[in-house]
Length: 493
Image 1 (cartoon, rainbow, N blue to C red):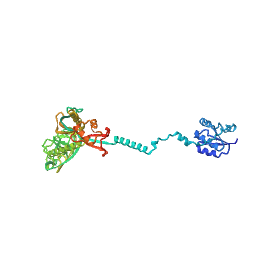
Image 2: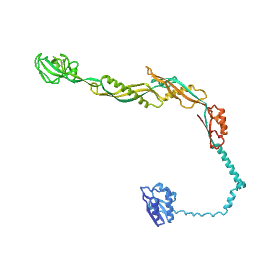
Image 3: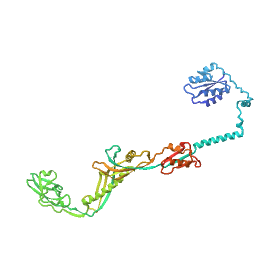
Image 4: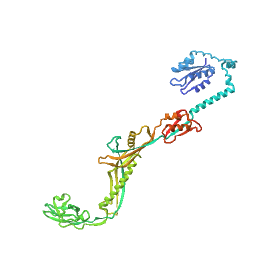
């Protein structure tokens, strides 16, 4: 029988293979799958291709060695061969005849069957009066449920109040680890670095060097060799140094001498020294020569000018330190929380980072400026520790039947003082408002289901209140308080 052979490629899919089948005009169509490549066709795809071949009046066959494809094809009744030669030589299995579906004839008694299955409603349910009564009952049931769950009420009670106050003697120490009911609290350390620049007008007079002292030095030979003494050789007395002003040659021979002019290194009256006081020479020349000044040195002078004295610098430093201390306290407070307590008498300078006077000591000037940068430290007590101490003390002395309505407040009584051991002592006055406790279950039993005025009277007579309670009902036109307790909220003030 004539067979159309179609070779598939790995990129073929259901649509492309179906198009290739459409061109076949033979009673048999043989699809040859690639030997070393995979064609992505599912069982459902093979079923579609088989039906398409049937619609063309042809029988579909496959040539492949892939086990999975062979199993899928055999499950659909598609002949599978190992080669095209085998497919042309062997006979193909006949296709099973296709069955034709014959529709069932329509049923003529559907309305009768429906009437037999569904029972008719009772007459009272189909009548107008019955429907109105049923609707009315439903509405009343909904309204009854709404009357239970929708109304809400808010009760504002003003129970009896008291003020509880106590003064606690507190001792803050760095070595304390925790808060004690005896008043012991830990002291924390905080540090800050502050800078200041302070100026002071100078009216004092100081003496400053004006001219250098001059004189003559005599060098005596202590050896038999000639000695060269260069200009700039340094000689000195106990108080001041001088330098030679020219090169000289000390003749050879014991006790030979030469005189050389000298000048003081520093200007001022200090350079005027007495005779025979310049006896030292710098360097190795002192091993072979001796020296002295046969006459006093003269010409060194000082001048009185406007300049800062030691008292001026001390005065300016005291002012700068006072300003630094004030700025340090401000800066330390900025690092603390609002409820932390700084101990001002513990603030101290721990390290001076910079201290520069302009002009320097001994220099003239009409204005003295001081730049200072100092690190300060101080101790404080944290607000959490103070709150813990306050609560523990107040709770220990609270009256039964009352409860706190807010966190306690505290304030210092006097200024803190720190002893020689580093322990800061101060008195802390703490106070809080107490409200008499209210039993909410008792309130619910007194007010639920009553009119607001009746509930207000019952609450006033049963509870200890400082003023009449306030009752708000939602919706406002509803005449009674809710019956369900969780629809009533109680607030105490």
